[in-house]
Image 1 (cartoon, rainbow, N blue to C red):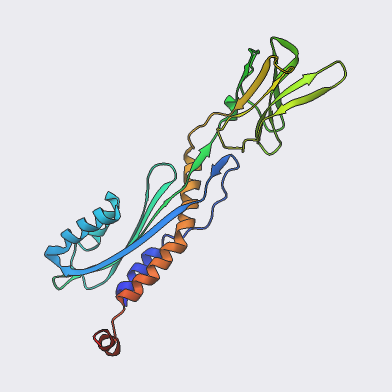
Image 2: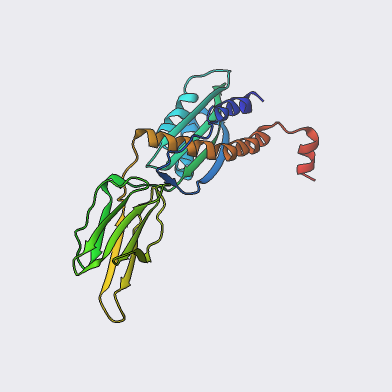
Length: 267
């Protein structure tokens, strides 16, 4: 029908290709929920329906404004509407709708998707080192492939190291050095690039002796405008298949029923 065609047009406008995420951006698996609804009501009842939808489906204010504008003027033509509303970092809402206001009756239907994802970014330009007992901790930029170290003040043979692999991961190490060799006495877990988690390890000089602990961390930071757009595009791409499936279900509900279907419903 022309009604479902209008909604389908709005849904297709929300399709997006998958962007290439920056290497320093660590994201989880996207969570997507979808819903749909439709109504044909007298003009003087439509605001009650739209207000109920706003509450039930947690539709954003801009989406509600768009739905109202869609059926504000009387027209025999079904019109299409779509909107993408950005929330907090890693949160997105999409709405596609179709409808008309004709002959005192408003026909209005929509599909909506809420998508979210955990986003983590770290700033290794401000890498933080700490150690116990005290050492001359050296914090600051640490590029992939680099190693920064500081000697423990109470043990000149042991040192705390913050090491980044060529892939950008970070780990803490305590190394022991004698006259001929330098060997590791403990290695912390590798922390993925983009994560602000702490890598740490500790070792004892001898049984019951001093414990030497080292920790390394690249503190978290907020995304810049380009990174935010990449996250939005990633969510939009992830949400579209479910939004399209919800549209298919809505289209089936809007199809006129044949006489055979009507009769079967009352058998």
